Image (cartoon, rainbow, N blue to C red; front, side, top):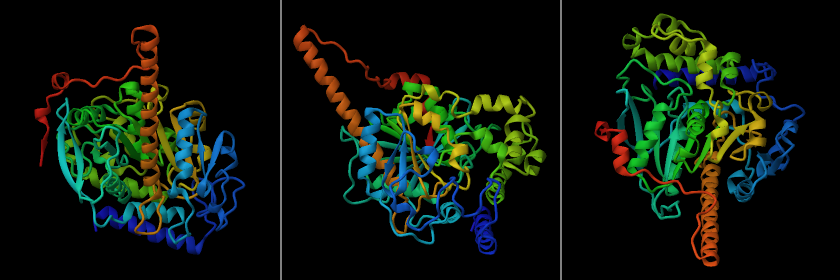
Length: 467
């Protein structure tokens, strides 16, 4: 087992021991370990069977769903379409409670346990404009019989998967790729510089919410699959990268729909408050081990002694990106540039956020979720469940995490909704042409796909190589 696996396994054992010895032990979020995070909620075994909202603070402008979940969103035709799809979803139906029901077990099993068998990946390295490298892992197997095509034009849709910001490729990410491959998608996993075996060829890492590398990767994916719909899914802290990309690119993001599993929305407060100590130390240890191989290469730009002496995620982030030797910046300036919600009003893509009320990493939803975003922005939807931990949402094996099925079902609903909208616009244009003697364009112009020649002028794709 690798060092980070042993560390997380040790954390799992410590948490289990603490739960047995002191079930009322309170963590840094101000609640008891294993206790309900929402005020006034009761910890009963039949909790998932009721159809109410997970908490009183989310009862306004939220729609009840099976399994004790609720959908928080601004009323719209798109919201009604998504609501109908979720109410028909079998993935949300409450099942028998198991030993995996606890939030800490859901979270740690998700990070520790491997997927067996894992998918077959074909790695491709993309050299960026500044000569840095990112990696794209295309999921090419195992081949599944009866594979269903998931797009209107008969071409398989591309599913871009963004792991967490620590670079850990978890069992749920691989499980999502396998399920998406079975459902007819073409999954590809995006790895940042220096993450998951991607070489760090320049002394520059990707800041928490800087989408510049992701922009180049998406442009390359569009170059390879210009006619295929593109969907995007992010996990945990990796959602900051996806939300930053959608906000900066707006209607030019090339993404049809997106989903965030247990997103960290108030990122600065999340770093400053700190995580419960087992998770804080586990994530910090994983990052130090991953960067230790590049310690010599980073000495010219980063104070490595301060970096590896850091005792919290905030200290580590500051040492890596703020207290640099070349261009030091303040903590405030760093988050002005990297807050994932800094341009959220410019996002023009439906985004489904799946969160759990007992998330031990993000904290209680009334403190960490920006509910006003979901109440006011018609593109953002919050699916809030009672249980699931952080990025867990596990069920009894061999069933995949129910969040995966919900995401793929929501993408299918979005595809049908947009297809119907195109038909309605085509009918309106045909009627206007018949009555007025000339064809007039619809209210919304179709986004034109850039030609291959233009893309080749922007990027030199010959710099991309595979192994």
